[in-house]
Length: 385
Image 1 (spheres, helix red, strand yellow):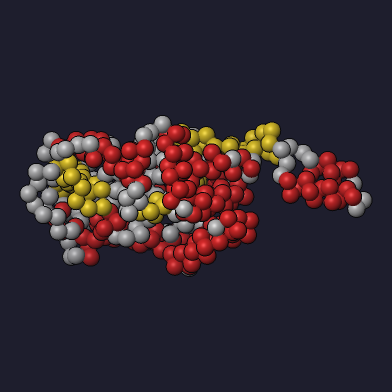
Image 2: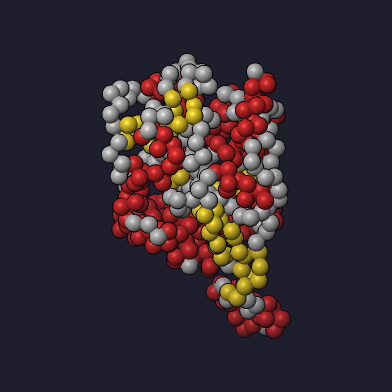
């Protein structure tokens, strides 16, 4: 069993380049914040020194962050960029496209990007178990709109996760929403399902069409493609198997976080402001969708295919309890490196940083949507405390 576990862990982390992430902070030309200017004026009127006034009027430094972007995008991030809210905090974002989780993780460890938010929970946890010091500082998709698909001519009725038993499934065998549910039903997820691996979601959907796989579990960004393919149908979503399972986590390296903690808190705070705006009304959601479509150069139909689906639930919250559950399932099923039991996963979930950002966002922006911040405080207690 140990040899099998070592072999599986080795395969799962194969190709990851271990390195250190670099800080992206550089001097820019943003003006000083209005509160600083006001305080400076007050100090001058009451006899404050010219040196203090000059210090307050110095241009604000701009921190430049390289952010990985996948094909489904991050609504909160795009809104915050479009509205200029990140610029107000002295932050400039450069988005770099990555389709696969492994590629994004490799880039993060090598310092080619500083942060990602759309590449699942499995990958970051497996990387932590392998010895890399990653930090989860928040989230994006709490439950992604991730469909389980089969051919339209499949005569078998979907009965739940049991329908995968004895079948060939194109998916990551370490998918804990499936593995955990199979375990609860008394099955061995490694032997009772025949898993086949493909490098990307397009190849997985093609495998189902060609009959190479009975089912596939694919990403949120593939909903439109599936809706346009008459040979495919959706039978369920991952969140049908495990509600609030923690889909996509916001991840940085420990080194980057230590060097940029205040900046990361500003990022979380601004994304919470964006989430509050998004949830304030249906009109705001439509506006956000248009912004996302424009910035990603995709059609409204493409976005509607998942953003209008009840399984698409997005939140900046880190979801500590759900991450812990995923960690334990991955460990019990042999998909974490040997010795995972000796790692305290809570040390890699920055709930304290998130709570600080939430409290500050409520203080500064609470009047924009008071009900939202009350809900998020309660949500934090339920999923993290």
